[in-house]
Length: 213
Image 1 (spheres, one colour):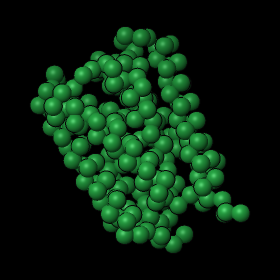
Image 2 (image 1 turned 30 degrees about the vertical axis):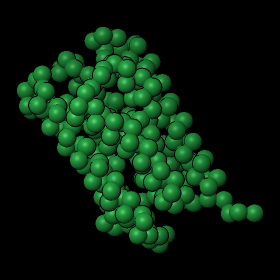
Image 3 (image 1 turned 180 degrees about the vertical axis):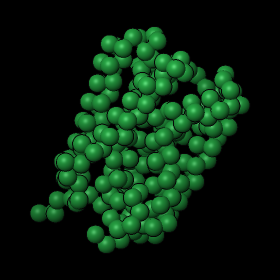
């Protein structure tokens, strides 16, 4: 695949990268300023949120698209299949937060702004980026399996670290409160959501890439 990047693609990616990195840095500042644990532990907790890790993927991919364009040749984060996988991940970040987690707390001021950036504006912006700019003709159903590696590794890390840290990033994986049986059921449901949206994005890509009659 040749580089199909336009100036509008790079402009969109540049804006997305700036917003993404600013939001991530502000969230890091806020979590340290309002910490309830030591600074090293707080930083580890920061990088233990799926929201943070996925927004980092978004910011990195926007940055690489701005620098390199969208192409299968070269950087990992410029490949359409990887950009589509990230679109799946950030979609789920936005959905789970806005449907389940939003009602568990009420941030104000800067925290409210950062919260909306990471969980609403950036997910929507990245989905629009995928729809508008990412080539769709190379998506394959078999991509779903490797796309599940990231959330599964994240889940494994969370469940392994939780008992020693006595802390879990999300209430639906909190073994201390729910027990392993309930957490495993919740985890299976979340994994099913990832698989569903992976198939959904590939299906949409295949429909969008069909030549007009």
